Length: 80
Image (cartoon, rainbow, N blue to C red):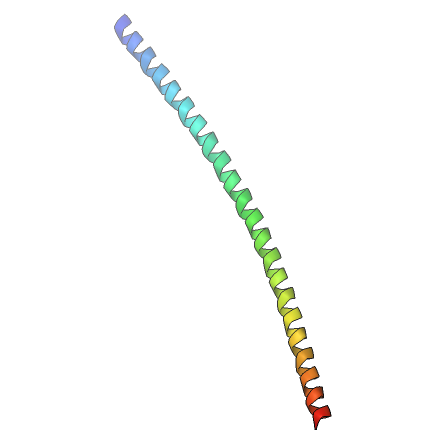
């Protein structure tokens, strides 16, 4: 009887130890998931800023191209 009780106690201690390890692992996984989510949010913000910058550059290039075309056309008119 004592042997059975000792084996049950050992089994329960093993179950408790494994449960604690699973809990620690789950906490670590949750922290990693949170960190990944925060990184994704930061990256999305950076992409939005980059898109806005590219849009501004495109607008400036188009404006410069339009002004260059106007200048060329005026130069053509004066040379005639």
